[in-house]
Image (cartoon, rainbow, N blue to C red; front, side, top):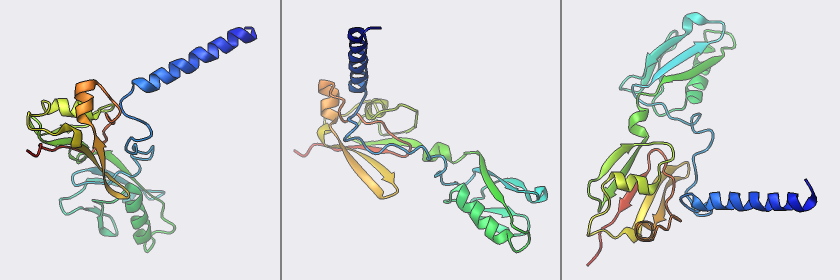
Length: 208
């Protein structure tokens, strides 16, 4: 490949990449923070989730149990241990500390085998001036527009330009403005953000 052909190829590749970026929903600069690659590690155990506890070289201490309604699990030797609202790593660290009184240098692993509470926690909710406020299961690739359409669209009393996407983060709840009017009327997808599990989209009513 000569120099001119190589330059043409690189130019074509750059244009293709830019076009692909432009076609997606939402602006990368203004979009809400995406979930991290460690989202699974940061998952908080919920009631009814099934957890598997393994203790290295002590298979008799291993259990697979559901999290009880009080948020606890029962573990041999140590009894009840809090699990709901904690990460698997948190529970494993707590068990290691408690088992140290009975087992020499315990190495504990806690694995989620069935995320039964995840169905509720991962839902996306649309409220306010929409045809039918909904709570829908999160799907990979879902955007604000997808969720609003699931709610039947907006009502005649809506003020779509003042819509918001609410998201819980490690720094607390955050609200991101959504120009739903531009999305619906002009096809402007700059604020058609990808949604994440637990997001709430609110569409206010007009003030007359």
